[in-house]
Amino acid sequence: MNKEKRQTAIRSLVRRASIRTQSDLIAQLKARGLDVDQSTLSRDLSELGIRKSGGRYVLPGSTPDEQQHEIDYSPVVHSYSACGPNLIVVKTDIGQAQPVSISIEGKEESSIVATLAGDDTIFVATKTKRTQAVALRRLADWFGDKNGN
Image (cartoon, rainbow, N blue to C red; front, side, top):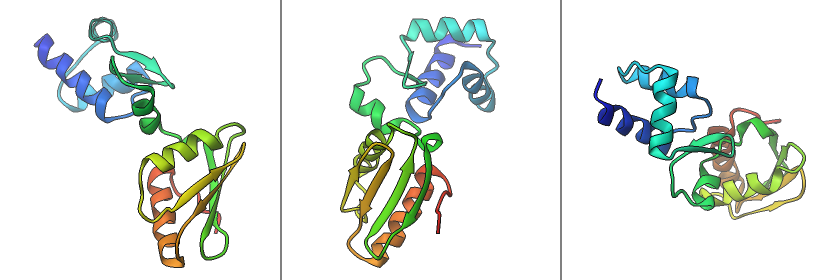
């Protein structure tokens, strides 16, 4: 197997997907037709300067802001539900509301006007009942179907 092709595929996968383990990366490479063993993958990651940050692999030179927006927060989001025509309440693990809120804001979803985060709760403001429905669908896309309604 061509080392350059393998390393290009590794960079591409790490850039585009949230890869949390070497096993995940090996499976993704295999899906692309590249069979790689763990020791070869470890060497490639080291040579490419790819490291773990926030529980996932990141490329060298990634800024904290870029990493923040790409982190998968679905495991720490417990539920979200509509509260009136313009508000959604999101419940998270303790201490995770602020990073999840930053992630939501970073997505620049037009149906979401603003977020307000406490320790484990986020208020998501929308303009209308219609934009609230759009925001609920986006939350499902980002965090899975955890709608408490």
